[in-house]
Amino acid sequence: MIISAGNKEIFSFATPIGVGLIESAINLTRICLFEKPDFLIFIGSAGSYGNLDIFNIIESKSASNIEHCFLKKECYTPIDNIISIGDVSRETIINSSNYITTSKLISKAYLHLGIEAENMEFYSVLKVAKEFKIPVKGIFVITNYCDKNAHNDYMQNIKTAKEKLIEYLENKKIIKETK
Image: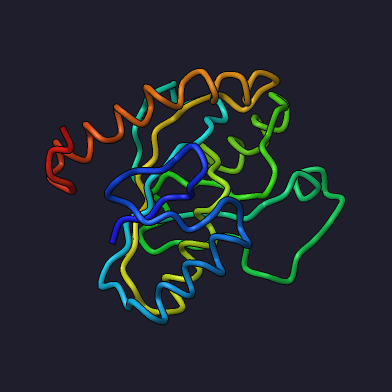
């Protein structure tokens, strides 16, 4: 089953699960309980912390849930804030938060931790899939850098990014041609 967040990231071949950590966790849990998918592929956009270029496409099975206060040593968490379904040493780690990073300084701190990009939902997708023992991966297209222009660049690039993501999925034979 192919899933996506929704809003600007609607695809004819994907089931939207909601935006952010909470909506996506609730709706994906509902899907797992009632539809019992054999495999999940989460598709969508991601913001680059600096090393990945606009329109790069990445696949991952690793996500973190690290908030900015953690990077500043101003908070702590009792939860395991990194989840990996694959070999974390060879994975692109995607950070998930209900907030979009707009600071180059904070972006560099994520890079220092080995985290390359952010997508609001991926951590909860992996967490739910792991709970239900469903194989899962994410496929992301970079729409913006995590800087002061993040939102404007996302809005400007999302249409082309979706086209490139669809082309990638067709080339990989994950979906049939959509045209």
